[in-house]
Length: 175
Image 1 (cartoon, helix red, strand yellow):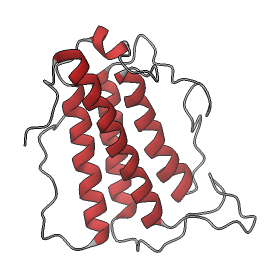
Image 2 (image 1 turned 90 degrees about the horizontal axis):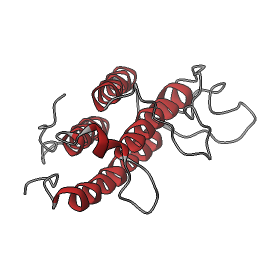
Image 3 (image 1 turned 180 degrees about the vertical axis):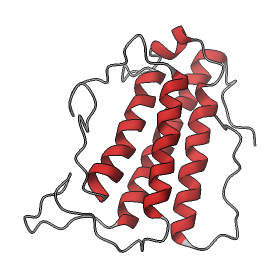
Image 4 (image 1 turned 30 degrees about the horizontal axis):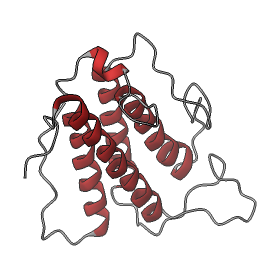
C-alpha cells in the first residue's frame, strides 16, 4: 500500500491524465487515513451516518467497480451494489480487513487506468451493464471519472473527521 503519493504535478494540463492521477492520489489518501487504525477502530463508527471506516472503504471499492466495470465498460458484475443492496448499509464481514479492501481498491484503480488510458473522455458509456440501451443519455467517460473522483474526495473528508475524532488528528494530511 502506498499512502505517500504526492498531488499531481501543478503543470499537468491533460484532463484525462489529471483525473487518473488525482484518482491515484485519493486512493493513497484513503490508505493513509486507515493506516495505523486497529481492527476494532476500523469497525466502529464515530460518525452520525453510522458508517465505519471499513464500511466506507468497502463502499469505495464497489463504487469504482460500479462506475467503471458495470457502468463505462458495460460488463456484467455480480452484486454491483455490494452484499446489501443499493439502500442498505454496507456489510463488512469478520474476515474482511483493511489490507484486503485496500488491495481491492488499488486493483480497481489499475483496472480504471488500463481501461481509460488512450480512451477519449468524450467516449460514452457502453449499453448493457449499468446503462440500458433505451434512448436515455449515457454518461461520458469524463463525467464518470469526475463523479468517481468526487466520491473519493468526499469520503476522504469523512475519514479525516474519523481520524480527528479518534486520535486528535493523527490522520490529517501534512501541509
